[in-house]
Structure formats: structure tokens, C-alpha cells
Length: 243
Image (cartoon, rainbow, N blue to C red; front, side, top):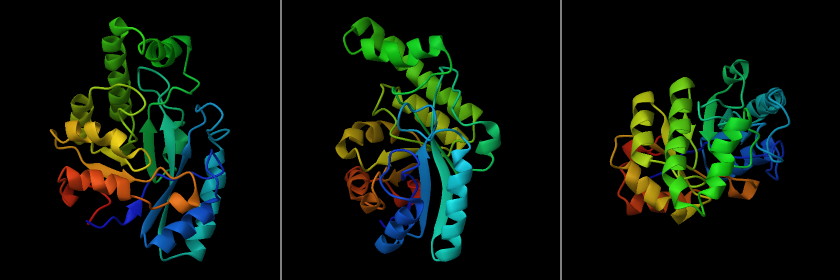
């Protein structure tokens, strides 16, 4: 299996350490044909882009790099945050239209749409660590939030599903298959994602192996994710950045 793209990388525009050009040069050095710049959406407390308009600035930097480095395909993306059980995300529709790639994930360190959503997505998930009675409820809520987002928006990839918050993996995977949304095998988290991938394999959903790089040196470092795919004998035909 050969991986030709990394669709999940961060820059200084959120909480990465390098510039857009740094990530592009790292991708070229490692031999990738495609790379995406996918900084955190603005609802991610402390580490997200300051506002959606920052995507315009990132887009301009990408255009400069496209002129300088025509040998690689550079995509404008974002790692959007789900901010309600109803699947709302923190990227306005007018900016979704500008993106080449829309990644979405569940995170707890976010500013939710409203107080009720904060209780459902943050407080209850935190309390459920100590309360068995809440575990079933938060699992349902987390899964429903992801499913609603996938059904409402043109999401290309659900990032690190099941890693941050408990979800019903097969249920989400079935919806992602119908919508043409890939589930991420996240190389930064390695074996922590193994059971999620094995559960999702029961469906026909496709996967993508990404680095989730926060440093240029980590762009294209996909070995941990690739080992999971090989250990589970996933066909390259089910991995969108494999050949």
C-alpha cells in the first residue's frame, strides 16, 4: 500500500508550528502528491482560527504556494467543530463553499452554539467519566451530533471518531457510507484508534489515513495509521489516499 496524500495538517493559523509553505515543502520532501491545510475551526477554544475570515488569508497563502510548487496539489480545508447535538458546525455556509476539503470532529474544548449544547456536548461527557448512568445517554448524543452533521453538510472526513468522545461507531459508519464521507485513521493517535477502525470495518465505509500534523516534520508521517490498516487487512480500495 502506498499513500499519496495527507489531508489533515495544521499551521500557525491555529496551533501548528509551521507556515502553509512549511507544510507544503515537508509534503514535497516526503514524496506526497497532495496535501491539505486544515486548521481548527474558530469554536475550538484557544487553538482555533480567530474567525472564519482567516480562511481567506490561508487561501491566499495556498494560491502563492500553488504557483511556486506546481508539482503538488494543495487543498484548502478546515477541521470544523460540531457545536450542537443538531450537528451545527462552526464554519458558515459561504466559507464551506470556498473549501476544497471539509473535515469535522467532536472536541470538548469548544464554544458551543448555546448553553444547552454545552451541557450535552461538554458537561455530560465530562461527568459521564464518573457516572455509569450517563454513559448511554452521552454515547447516543455524541453519535447523533456526528450523524446530524454528516447528513446536513458536505463533509469529506470525520476526524479521529471515537477518540475524544464515546460513539456508536457502526451506526456512524453506515451513515458516512451513504453520504460518501470517509472515517479517519489518525496516525498521531496510533493504536488508540485500532478498536474504532475494527468496528467500522463491519460496514462498507471508506477510510483515510492522515497525520494530524502540528509540526511540518510530521506532515506525511502516516506509518502508524498504515500499520493499523495492514494489521486489519484493509484493502487499499477502501482507503481514499491509498494506491
